[in-house]
Image 1: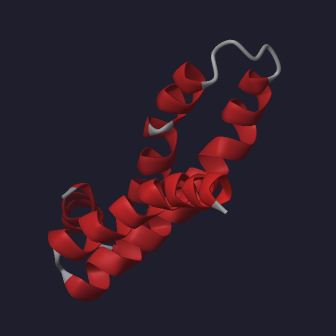
Image 2: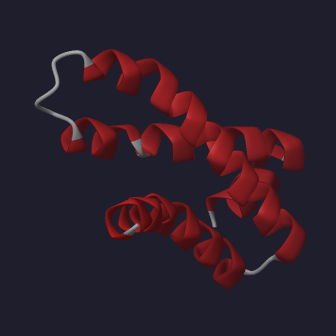
Length: 95
């Protein structure tokens, strides 16, 4: 995992968590932009707010990895984050 690599290179788990969280956050920006490409005002949100939110989520996943050392647990948490909006929308439609 990238976090483990950064921790070994930087010799600081906190610095590794910050750096890997930022990488996680900025790696998700292109997907956000592509998902909302037809909205001319979305670029501002995707360039400012989205990386900050995704970086915070990345910090959560990184801390979870540091605590459990289980890729399964981190993958399951990421899956829950991904499926939660779908389930929320599904419950709106069926209620």
